[in-house]
Image (cartoon, rainbow over all chains, first blue to last red; front, side, top):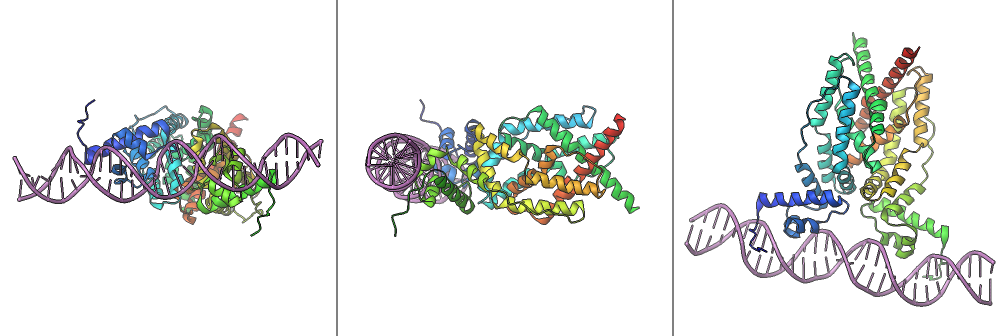
Length: 207
Length: 207
DNA sequence: AACGATAAGAAACGCAACGTATCTAAAGGC
DNA sequence: GCCTTTAGATACGTTGCGTTTCTTATCGTT
């Protein structure tokens, strides 16, 4: 056993810690994440971690944010509903792997630490590959004349993720196809039609 | 100091513990809830609590469920949007007092304890005063001919609570009036119109 | 190449809360 | 008034916290 492993510093060490934290998150989840375990796994010690992050929440968020979202290929099933179903299940698949438990756990602490809440909120409301996927899908539907032209409020672009996170955090179990279908059929598609109709109506009234 | 306080048992003791747990929840939140503090506050001891509940999550849920929702007076501002705004802000006011942090915290543990997830899910999807308030409001709007008649899927009845919980858990801070207005104007009202339109369209096609 | 500032790594700290086990004596059922 | 149940008290070992102290490897500078 070589005791000669060189002593890491700076960015290299930071990466190793974040990798270890991510692995721990995947194995035991946020609730059982301990600084000590992360330190052990990264082959370092607690003070090194505490010098960089204030606590579990910051560390977990840093580890999470570093995982770059895999850019997803464009999709076009030919119908709005079909595209949305694919999008929703992609989100759900990615979501239930990890995110929800981390989000839930971190949120619990965000209650007392506004700066953590801010980090989290910022991350989850920022435009993302996901919101632009929504734009593309709706744009395609409009081009197909499945929908009248419409403006998407930011909140509506975020809604798929919010719906899925909500559902998935409450269930614990992975979302079923029926649930995803219900989100699309009972909520999102009607919402898009309603938005388009109301915007059209407002436009007509203005003339 | 009278050491003669009678020794409570059974239901009476249970109430006292749940009251103490609820008070602790309001004071320090779920993240800092400790069994020891609850025991101390209730004037009892840890084993008594562990004999009844398996851990923090179960205790917190029990304390929460026991708090009966205050039945709210009927509301009728004369418009769908107005009624919804009142409803949403009522929910938000009640929600951010406690619920979110407990839900977030419990969800963090639900990840590893399916039976807790089930309890929580059951509680949050069950018909409630809230879902019937939605029914009433929408019913009134239909009666006023603000909306065509429509069936509300269960998911749509639950949506106001879900939207507010989502927003409120992410923000940490109490929801602003603008946020509530955005939920109503960008999401819920369009959704109702879209649902009505699609249902109407489906009906017409069937004939 | 030697020096000095920086920061990693190891160890130990007191603290808080965990969940459990043991014991006593008080309450309620019969 | 006996007897089963169980509340309440106490103490236990354990875990992880967040911090402190100290040694020494690494890096930038001269």
